[in-house]
Length: 184
Image (cartoon, rainbow, N blue to C red; front, side, top):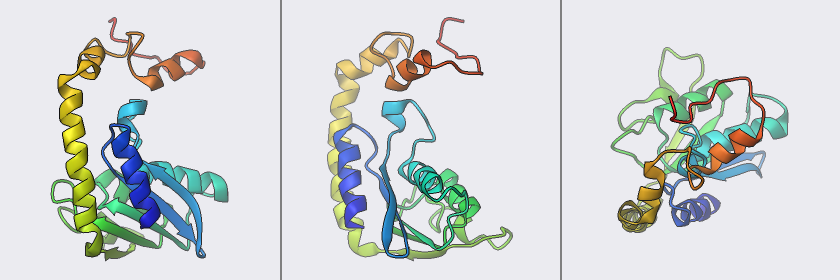
């Protein structure tokens, strides 16, 4: 969980929602990530999803059997569903998310009786205060972003030169799908 907290702090410093995730298999860290949806303009770039993708690439398998995913904040429905599909064995989270938590707070996707896989879940309440401090600091930083030049710079959308970093990456690579650059 310490490594996940470091990643959450890094996410907060980058202007992201402060969430960090680490996947461990047989006592070895095989993947670690922090939230990146804002910087990448990718709504699926949650720390857990990035860590799951990294672990799948490393293991060359989408089934992440015998793994434990440590995350600073209770996963949302998207991340919880991905963990079920990946067959993560155990989930450990540091703080509950009363807004969108899907490991017991609002939903319990990771232990839903009708699904074909259920995770063992541990909520480590000892970290809630530390995580709340990180989130509080993040909230102060975000307030500055919303009134500063970052907000107005992005107001024109990703077609501007200073828009989303991922847009520039997408534009530099050939792709098989149409891009919406806001000019339609």
